[in-house]
Length: 432
Image (cartoon, rainbow, N blue to C red; front, side, top):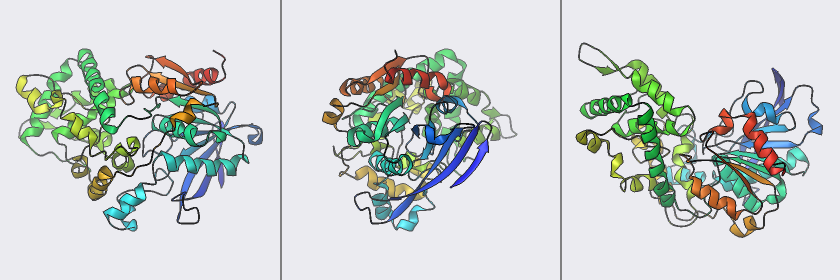
């Protein structure tokens, strides 16, 4: 363990050895990293634990500098553990550089079956018992972290004192097809709202699509900026400031050159930062697997369901004089040809998309009998997690209390910080 300070905080870094496969506790082990955070001047031994599970999949816990956002509120009464879920952050990494150590695509795919919510929760239980001496702790789950928290309630509620979920109540039984069939209309609405706010962006987007159809454009990191890759910048539209970020990105797209207008270096550099999966490859590789529960292969659900929504065909939009629509939180086969961080994992991703033996993640009967205090922020028309699915799950979990709001988008726990956490704690404690 290493302990050090930031303004207002005392930080301690932990490394936890855990089994790769919890069904084989004496087998291969990997490492999970967690950063303990305590307010300066507080005795950590007198504080209850709160573990934070980041959104994703594939993202390590947010790196704070001082008591920022919700963390400042949490350390007033908790000893916080910011957990890098397996394969992310400073935990044993899983990416194009490390996965070949496992062998070929088949071996890599088998390895990655142990990186879903079920394994993450079993890691949490091992870590909890080590840190708390067996006492239950509070879980704060953002987005995919809420999916993990719902699995936690299904399998190990004895480890939980309280569960707080922000934008992350999953459907208990929806297939990947059903998830994306619900998603595309939401994404279309976000596009409509964006072009209503920034009507000038319609022509800018059309000009960029026409430019990309006429030539091959390479990003600074070696990725290809295809029309579909450009459309995927719509992932920004699900966050609170995303519509404004997208607008600012588009307004500086072109510069004049001796050969005619060209996409500027500055624009391409910013696009590269938004589109590269180098820092979070598991997001792409496992994205549809988080919805798989033995109902058949996911089989690139987002790509197949997109074909049911021809309004997202940018070429048709261009021909008809309509603005090309941006897409949202979807992963497609072409990601594994355009992105250098994903190209070596293409066959591995294909094998995972074809897999059929995924285990169930949620136990409706156990959730219906739940006794753990649970509060969830559900964001109205959340682009990333379907609001109707979330509310259906809320009704299925005994005692779960919701705060449905349009004050924030999906990243409300970042934007709203202390206020969001205050509201959820009050709900869970029946103070509202």
